[in-house]
Length: 141
Image 1 (spheres, rainbow, N blue to C red):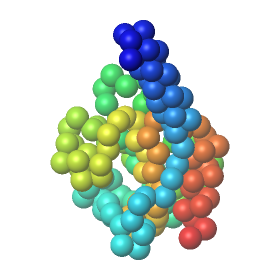
Image 2: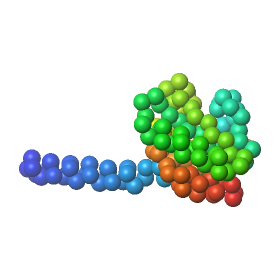
Image 3: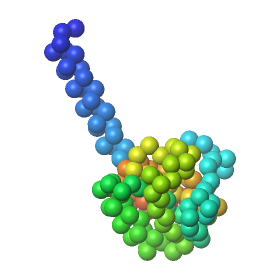
Image 4: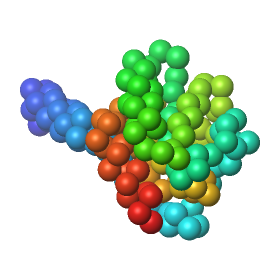
């Protein structure tokens, strides 16, 4: 393979990876483990009480521009859906929790059910509609 061919292949791989990351940004998915057996967060982990019906947990960092937009989206959702609380966690100050929850980027948003089980998660800035759909799925279970 010539140097030009290697360069073209590298650009194609990088472009494909960028498209995949953009497509996945902010999309919610159920965690790999069964929510019944999966990770739980309690008020001690969050530094705040759980919501009556569900809790939206946002992992943020100080210089994260999408985190500010996500904070606003979660605030809108909590004002629309009764019994739902939003909690923001400073990822830099809570490294043990970040590692435990496998947070790889900010913002990461977790949807917890009333018992604190992680039932949905998204990396990147979700839209209001994405959060509402994920919350609806979580409340339906």
